[in-house]
Amino acid sequence: MTTPTPPGYASDPELEMLWTAPPEFIGMGDASSSSTAPPLAASFSVSLPSVKSTESAMLTPTSDLVTAYNPLESSVQSDISGGTIFGQQATYRVVPVGYHGSAGPAQWLADQPLQQAGQQFAEQINPAMTRALRLVADSVETIGIFIAMLNNAGQIYTTADKNSVLPAPSDSGS
Image (cartoon, rainbow, N blue to C red):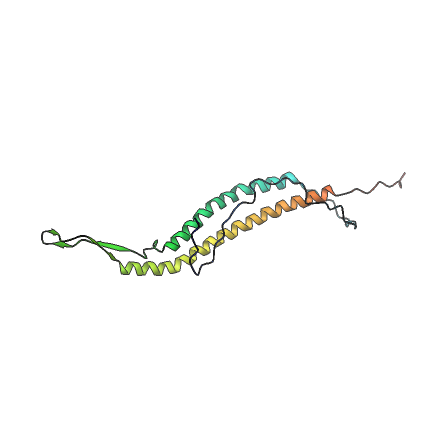
């Protein structure tokens, strides 16, 4: 069950992994339909195993962050919504005592000073906690975007490599 976001707070995202193992580099479509020749460029080399290894090395820790973030975010939002974690509803027990012992049943009374302090503290800390969660979520999302861009670079290189053509050898020089 998802806890509703308290009024006045920005809703934090729920994170999820799009993949847990790097997809195979199979290219991104057919680039051979282009009618213009690509410009000449200096030679370069791409190590697809290195790209995939780097991507793989980032996926597990990122997945661990996602796994830890969602329950934490849910717990924080639940505590904020509950409105009791900082003593906002604090009470104390009073047992009436007479000359010969107990003079009646115990009573629970509101601890006004503690409740007031808890409410003031919650007004300050709740937005700070949601901002901290948002920073974590944004950071994890940025890591995910980098991983996706790394994969995209490998896919684009694979497409370019599959569609590259060597010019026909010329007979000049014989």
